[in-house]
Length: 125
Picture: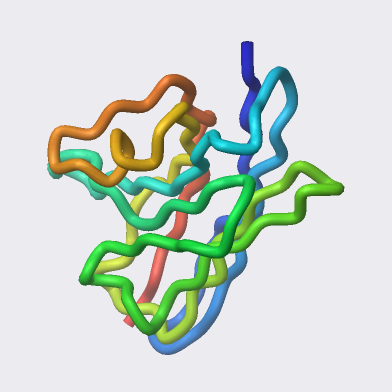
């Protein structure tokens, strides 16, 4: 069992920045992947970014490349999402996610084993 608790959402103006955190507890392995997804009102949940607990590879949706950075702190067992140059279309509930294989998470038909409760990000123009 894995528990994911997000924090750091809020209201920000266009062009601003926010950093989301996902505190992880439970049984995890170095090969497991952590990711961020988001869901805007009336839209499907979509992949945003992913990272494994080991290695340096990161994965991003095209819509956030160059603006978002996913990172991890293995000692704190926490995953972060730094969001810069925010746009109104970034407004969504952001969810932390975990899966045993990063390929499952970044696939168009994604698979996720555990979800966090979500944190609202609102970008005002």
